[in-house]
Image 1 (cartoon, one colour):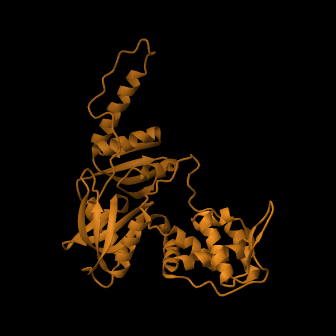
Image 2 (spheres, rainbow, N blue to C red; image 1 turned 90 degrees about the horizontal axis):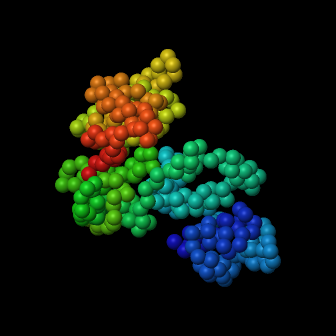
Image 3 (cartoon, rainbow, N blue to C red; image 1 turned 180 degrees about the horizontal axis):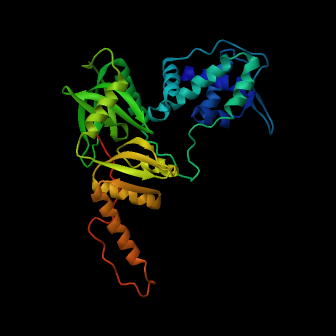
Length: 345
């Protein structure tokens, strides 16, 4: 890992001309003391790095210095391939490897294209931390060591021992045969089998992991997209409720964030979307649609429309009079609801 860090340090100095020890430490995610030790190691190895004193000082390379340092290692190649297909570097713990790989890619460009590419990259912002309503992104985090063990077992085809906390259950150790990793809307999942049966594990619920030396019992080739679709279909075939709903297109993403699944059924003449949404049960559907207020309308089933009508009537009654005149209105059972998130195991 230190060799990769030294390469990244040289590339950072080549691309930025001059950087302070603090800036290098932030880019490389190490301490300032580690950066200073790395600078000494580079100097001892003959890399012409020197320090400039003063207010605008820092470390720099002698002008014109260039060496072949752009070979991608395994983790960096994996990070580029993953980022190219999705934003998986966030969920799968490949963020540092991606940053290092991209520095090598930029350095490999002809000098005439390097500045243009860097400027163009500053003109694009992909998936910022918040949206226009200042809502933060929900990203599930794993420790680096845990994610490294999971990736190692998946790629090497070894069995994996997990300390897993299923919903509403005490954490337990279990040994699985890993098949692949999937990320969906910033949530990561491990597809595996256990005792021959399909299992899907939320990465955020894996407390610890250990890749075993024993080979996993799995096919040599896998169609991960097909496997995911099949597991989704089995999951949705359980005890869920289907709702036909009209929604203001500006609130579509809000609805998607609270459903188990959704399918677009068309657009009405007033521009509203007509969707077929799947919820865990009637209480879940009532809670989710209530959050959207007048920006959504449940068309079916009738039981959901009745539940929402009762809730709206109770609220209208409560606010009909001034606070001094309004009698206390008891809540009907189940009126205060919270969202329950679906889990596979």
